[in-house]
Image (cartoon, rainbow, N blue to C red; front, top):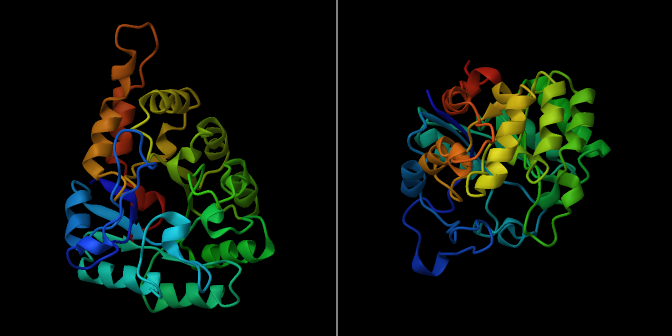
Length: 294
């Protein structure tokens, strides 16, 4: 079974009206990206995954999601209800994660509502996009509630082209301190913390319940080769999870990109990434690792 652990809730239920279309030129080096998409676009773009984890991101009242992340949800959208509605329509394919803004006074109440009423099964946070200190007291309270409820947390990890998103909040070494404080909490570090993949590798190596996804890496082939080769040398390939970052990429693009990882070193003496370990990422039962198979 193929599991895609990193996808974004569609912006539109039906086909995207022409006036709502957006194009982002900085997100990928090889082609522009259209972040606006429909339910049908999502279901096509996440094949061949049998199950996909889907989420949006919460912001303080009055903050525009398009300005902060480039994904233009309509003003006033309750992102958790939007995600829950989509998941309820496709329960055999989708697992929904909620999102909260940790500095909001009702954040813990929203986690409880998301898990118990909306049936969402994890939490998505982006400390740089949401502009909160991931080691602050309000953030620590979020992790404590997640650990208590037994739900995993997926963090955006690594850089971003958004000028107002503080990169230091998304550095992989921050996750070491969080994992020390909450040793039973399943955590996914998105994008292997790019461009600090080596730091991500040493952190996931330390902590049994800390994982990283490989979303958003294949379209930088030299970087992908280096980080997967390092992961193999540090014996953490088993801690890497498949993620596409749809709509920025599709699931099939990501799988194809992983399988091409050694093409860049053809004709050289550089050591390859073991192909069986690449297939291990693609076929990994991430739901079991994260406690989501129940």
